[in-house]
Amino acid sequence: MKWCVGFLLLIVSVSGMAQSQAEKDKIRELELMRQMDHARRVTMKIDSAVRLSDEGHYQEADAQFRLILKSIRSVPTDLTYYFGKNSFFLGKYRQSIDWLNKYIQLKGTQGQYSEQAIEWLEKSEQELLKLKAQETKRAYEVLSGDYYIDCGATGKVVCPSCKGSGVIVKKNYFGDVYKSCPACEKRGYLTCDEYNKLLKGKLISD
Image (cartoon, rainbow, N blue to C red; front, side, top):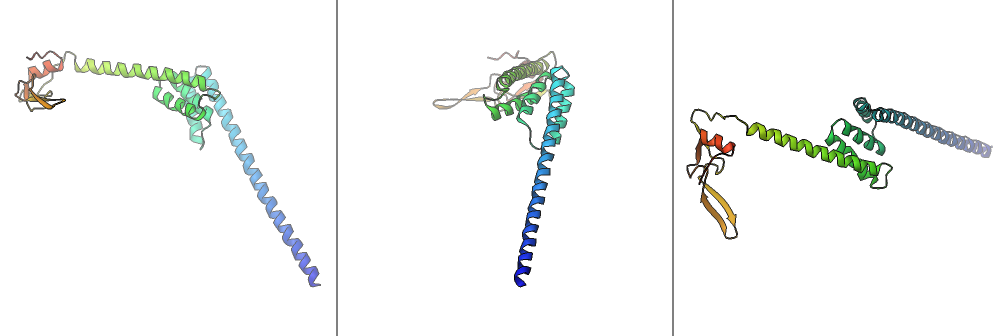
């Protein structure tokens, strides 16, 4: 009788373990299906954004790419290429360079879009250099235009060439060489007229 009871308990225990394992397998299966469905929906959204970009709707594509990036934890590698390329057409060259570099770092030269990524990266870098050159030119024009800088009540400014010391220090193989400042002539300061001429590169000194 005891043997029968023990056997029945063993059967119940094994059955319970099998049922527990089946439930775990079912949960894993449901989670896998959920992940696959999420990946499918993300892929559909990416494809939609890519179509917008290919059709020239770069601003709309950018907005859609950003929404996708907010909704995912792990960014698909191809998205880094698409987003970087689309950013170029919006003139967002730093953004373009950043994301295209990500693609190249991940895929190297063997990725599906590696060749195109390198081409768009070079274009973005060239355009960014042009922008920097234009910004430098604009800054130069503003600083060296026909403006007279008011030096205040004293009418004097600390000489920017020697920082007020009256001497210019240069280094050579034998050590420091001290030379009288040619801009302020050892005074350590410039008059307002002299200062404005210096800014314009028109200050004549011996």
